[in-house]
Structures are given as structure tokens and as C-alpha cells.
Length: 221
Ligand code: DC
Image 1 (cartoon, rainbow, N blue to C red):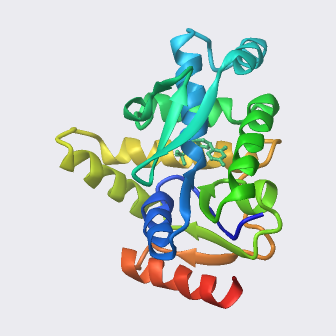
Image 2: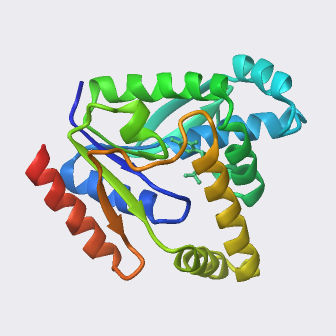
């Protein structure tokens, strides 16, 4: 096992931005597990499978070939050998990922891949169940959250910057719905691990959050 920092928390808390910065600072590899669930979701969408079709999801999950590569330190997700990074960040894929990630077969397959990645390398890994299920022995666990209003505002600003018009109220409603689904599902629900440090980033800058995590890492690793 390499060294690890496990970062969990709800959508839009800033996990990936912060995790990337922390990984760069420490020379660790950043593993974005949400991107793996998104790649699985993209596969299901491309296969025309409905999000409520459990049998269809389980069959497709067996066929889906998902793997990870690193190019210039950047994680590349390969679906059936194709680099699909450019297709993963849409709301459609995110909503499908939230629904299909509740499936135990989907989780089993991707958790396995995540454990393998962490077994040989030092990683900063982010997701929903990293501290609780994927890396339960990690010595540095962070639970990063922020209010739903703040998270919606961040997402809205991100879309606006890309020239995409959106409705902030709708974004917040989607965030709350996704949180509820992620936290109330039977398989590996999103929750703070007992030994995780809670960071609420609502009133913090990115640098403040990064420094808080680096300080924890120094103390614990
Ligand atoms: O972090 P994200 O928005 O890219 O994640 C997309 C979905 O995948 C999210 O709704 C929950 C799910 N997910 C999960 O169940 N477990 C993880 N470790 C990471 C993501």
C-alpha cells in the first residue's frame, strides 16, 4: 500500500480542485473516482439503458471496459479503449452516474479498480466512499463539505464562465436531490468516516482548504 489521502464529500464541495492541488504539492497521483462512475454512466447512456433498469445495468456493467491512464500527470479515463474525459462532466452523465452508482455490481467493479490503483502508488483519491470503503486504513481522511447554496453558486459560476446559461435554483435543487440519493442509498452511502476530519469550505478560500489538508497530511502521514 502506498500513502494515501482520502477525500469524501457531496457534489460541488470542491473536492477535485483541492485534491489536484494537494496531489501536486505532495507529488502524489490524483485519482478522481467520480470520473469512473461517470464513464460507467456514459456507457449506459450510449447503450440506451434506462436508469431504473437494474438487470440492464448489471449486464452492461460486466461488458464495460473501464481503465485509467496518466498523461502528463492527468488522469485519463478509457472506456472500451477510448479516451472519454471530454464527455464526463455533463449534467446528464452526472445524473446517470448518481443513479447507477447505487448499484452494488457497479460499485464492486470500480472499487476494485480504485484499490488496485492505490496499492502501488501514493494517491490523493476523492469520491463518496473512499474513507469508508475503498481505503478504510488510510491515515489521512478528509470529509469536505459546503452549504448547498454555496455549491450551487460555484457550479453556476463555472458554467457561466464557459458561456453556458443556467438556472441557479435548478442547480441547487439538483444538488440537493443528488445529495439525498448519495447519502440514503443502501450500498456505500456518502457519510463521514469516524476518523475523518470535517472541513466546511462554505466560507473558506481554495488556498485555505488546501493548507488545512496539507497540515493534516503532515501530521498524519
Ligand atoms: O464526484 P462526481 O460528481 O464526479 O460523482 C458522480 C457520481 O458518482 C455521484 O453522484 C456519486 C457517484 N460516486 C460514488 O458513488 N462514489 C464515488 N467514490 C464517486 C462518485
